[in-house]
Image 1 (cartoon, rainbow, N blue to C red):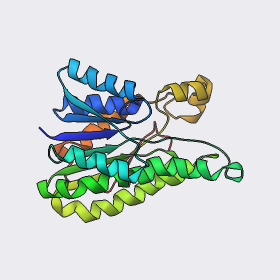
Image 2: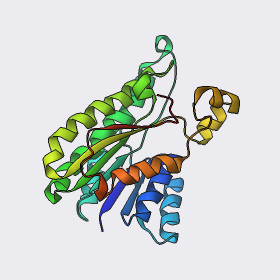
Image 3: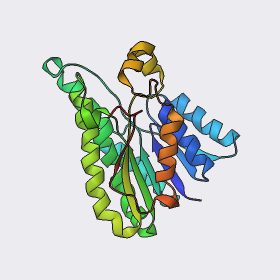
Length: 239
């Protein structure tokens, strides 16, 4: 059974991705950090529906801790699917943005991608099959006011994925980015009214987490073996 690691696996999108990959027969490693109980709940639900899952909790911004955690996971064999979904936002106009706001957001999304992927890469390469998928955002493609930190972090993932895709292409490994737009979550529900969503999104609605997960599922499958180095928007035609 191939193993799949999903960082930020307790978020709405992360949970949907875990469910999708579990339905495809992967053993899920559900990662969380500050919401450990919610992370365990995701793994429990996967097991109750016939899936195979475990939990790992660590701070991805701490290089030594993340590297130690990944090394421990490798004791059970290589991880052949990595979905880096972990990310935070801390919005402010740049003129009023603190250094902590800048670094925190970039640390989780961009540095976290390195801290997770780099230790797992050589074992994956030796199997000559792998799927690396970074979850970005529409903000990384077009930018939004008050999100210079978030946009920088997510667009940085785009460049990292495109470059890494060329490095591992001959080893049967693909690297892609999925960039969601407005997806249903407590955050979007608390931030936007239905009228605002209808005016912003050509499809007149938020996307469902499952709609993002289905794209991730395809990218993690055998069928996507010739698709690499791409940024795929799931945004209701916003871009």
